[in-house]
Length: 283
Image (tube, rainbow, N blue to C red; front, side):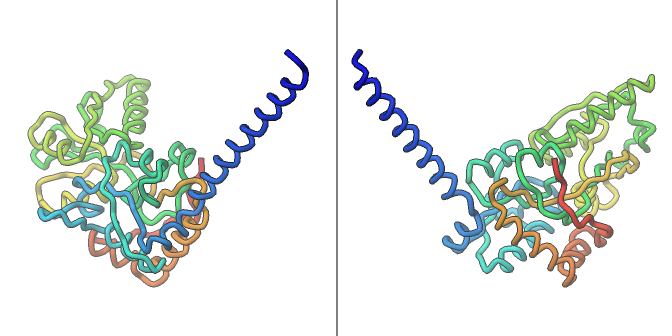
């Protein structure tokens, strides 16, 4: 092949590569500022999973989303000068939906973990997400963490509780005790129903979530503390959305200072959460 056509081919190839790079850069730039996008549409889109997380988030029979996080979402949207739209999303797919651009952020009882922080950025914490075990009040075989060996425990698929429960079970085995049988569920109501029906001995959930169920049905559940987990709820945003993250952190700081966060926690969870960290969870 003549030299001149080869040169032209190489030049054309470089031009195509440059054009593709510019298109890609333009795409990233277009999605790099979720706060500007939200202000342009006049609405903050928030991913939530409201399928039965008790006082944190739940839905009324007519479809209204209520709970601590629902009101906190409204507070943040108002601080940003925006209307609020909560986008119901199944929990296992909520981070992929955020990353695909379906909504601007997640504020839905999400525990900030190092593993999740590799995919998203977290705000400063706004609540205690420490794990507890729970069972029905009539279950006489599960009264404390000492009774967990050999029990069947339910956990919610797609949460950090799955890994925690597996490690907890492995630690029991390493200590010469029977491990736990871990059963996963797609949603909390099904898991709670299975426990009430005696199909599992208990479950593991963040304290505020199962606490919400216990508050709504006094005397029906027993909460078992002492798992040793200390974790926190936070807002999740895409890595590139630093302006939105700054704005959310400022709103949460205001909610702490003006008493809004304490009031919401008292209203929905019975008491305010104290000693929240001032820094976000990192990978």
